[in-house]
Image (cartoon, rainbow, N blue to C red; front, side, top):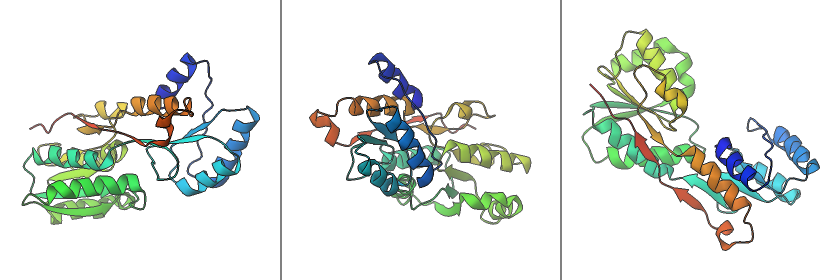
Length: 242
């Protein structure tokens, strides 16, 4: 995403400063002060804490585009996460699952909640059982594997690829084969998803394009397009293999 921002910005004669706030308002405030000192023309942010960052940006009169955290106040660029969740469900259904585990991140964040809603909208149409599991619980590997066995889980949908890679590592340690015993679907299409064995089947939300679109909106604040939310359709990458 950052590369997409940088490539467009440099082509227009702008340089890019990057700061990782770790979703911490104090860190975000410090970075904004730094950006102001360099006379930055605007900010592109992926911060989860939309409202806190929004207040900081307003207080400093800093033009902003939210990426992947679209709200109804400030213009944003996002993938269609509901549609992405639907694609995850459709992909997992190709393996004819019976018992699906959905491992999710913080559902107070609209991005992840939208994906869950999309998954549910598809799975409810089929005669399959599905269960939920919070990602923080993966630290107890024995309890996780016991759940897999007790519920006879044969398929897992994860909120992102990092979570999918972590999950696959755990179940492979306990001698489960992927995808023969348990199929796994991730989300994001990060480069590491192609470096596992087998590769993670995933949903591509076109992070590079999101970055390009975000900086393009930011550099054209006077156009009518700035006040419109731009939503991109994700695409599936890979298939369930046996």
